[in-house]
Image (cartoon, rainbow, N blue to C red; front, side, top):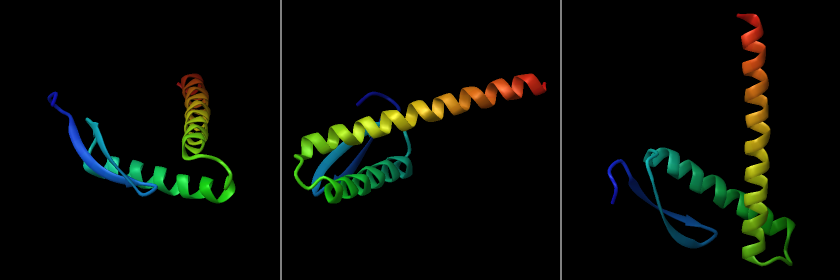
Length: 84
């Protein structure tokens, strides 16, 4: 395994996964728990959808949130630059 990479075993929606990355065990645990919780919520809201489609919806929601936060961060940086 490349230097700086860690393995974390997670259960998401009843399936086992091995997550590999440079983040801490606590970070990966939080990510896995968040994904598991969001999958459970989607299951309740979208009873007729396959797990694959739920996973795609989850990815769309995650990317949307990421883009929103990126825009908010850029706006904060611009405000900070004007204050300096």
